[in-house]
Length: 281
Length: 159
Image (cartoon, rainbow over the protein chains, first blue to last red):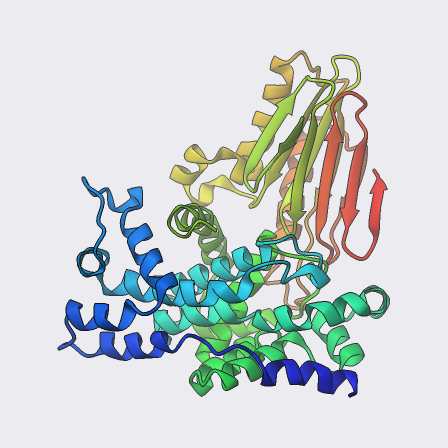
């Protein structure tokens, strides 16, 4: 089997994304859904159930006593937090272990980076209004999922990739594509397709390193912008460093000023502290 | 002891066996200072140039910004017996993503503010490794003043 086939084969056999996510999202969009119905579906996923209870009992909600029933917890956390908990717990399982090793990322760093992009993307919806905050958060969490599968192949060709980046001044994804035949962004797009996420979300993952990302669909623009800022801040950044291309003039379309970008970064640090408390990142 | 300096954080020490380290400087800047006589060293990791962006935040997290963080780094070193005329100053970080339009030039802005502040206050920079697209990790040994820098694509070396 050629190496590219070997890589693509990994995608073919990727473990499915928890089905409960789509089911719960649909239920939450239906105003007639009640807590009992939700609990009925959620209780079969032990990780999500445990996380709902854990987060509900975190100091953030300041409850006077410990909550131990899922029904009660669902009433307390509310729909938006529940959506976040479900997507976060379902995605986290794909980032366990040394998933970013080939990129010289310590354990947990790829996940931390992904959560940071998710949170920032959700907040930046106020600047790029056509995007649903839930979709922004989910794509933020999953935009680098391709790295998990490309990591060992990047490790094999690490020297050549770095030489190409330094010598030819190309971006890390361009070097990945040339030396491995596929980039982590392309691989991520394929994985989201396999998981049957909406096409707009597949595209946003696929295009998140496209230099013209800011001129593309609003979700693509939003996620690639959030990623660029999180990379600039150095959160969960590996050997690829800041070697990514982005045509900044595309920002004009959204009327976002450099000062607003600075503010988003300043606010993200505090939001990350809160997420760390809630999700134990 | 290894003391980790986070994003928007600062640490100063006069314990000879302490090592100050900050990981993953992207567009942020790391300022390393060391006094060879008093054997006092400090490391600041700031993220943005100007605290006027958000006064409240600057009060709560002064090390987030160059203009509020840098003076505090020096003042803290003076408290431990450091003297301005002896401090060896090294500056690293300030990378940026590849954008021809310069919209994402946070690194450049971070560096410009520091140069201006140092020039005004007669502070010389002994060593500098700034810009490009690499990701940097920097550490300072308090006992010896040895500053080690790791840059993606360039390996690890003494600065």
